[in-house]
Image (cartoon, rainbow, N blue to C red; front, side, top):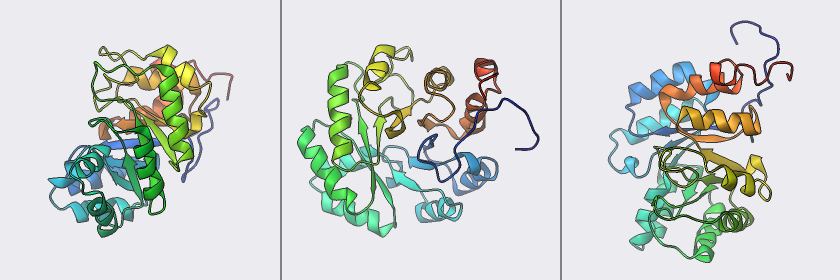
Length: 254
């Protein structure tokens, strides 16, 4: 930090297991990645190349090398995994991870119907090769999953070998954990937390109001994801009580 303030909540240090910020790269150029890292690298824990953008992104290897040189792991979005699976190309997907020397992968079923046991099988297989993040929730806003099923799926996927489970919200924050307005499904989140440890969940929360809600509920070291590159520093100020939305939340608590 550039100067000292008292009553600032403690933040975990990198490499973190909680307090993670997962950033969504939706097609940044190599130069844009360099610019982002120049100011935000200390606050980025992992980067997702959104959905299947890696398929069409130019200079992909150079981009991955740029993140790697900053010590920041990258993984391809779960939709790409689904695109390979639905085409019966799972072995090709595994070879792709090796080709680009990726250490993380996302297993999801937000765009295709997949039996939970089959999904857990993919998690078990991939966890022998890489660190797996599994995503729970549908990208279809009309598909409402009851809380007990979220808990059952998250628990099973962690037991199958997932490092973290991701609560689906898409890049807009209007499905899954949230209503179409962006409002948090508060009862859903609170019920999940009765059974699944908060440090094992990454909550996709692209909107500022959603980030504020989770920080107020779970503290500065909540895991949040799908953060836009220009929202990384603002999110860190939310975590530290240095933005109006959380300004008084940590006073006399640090």
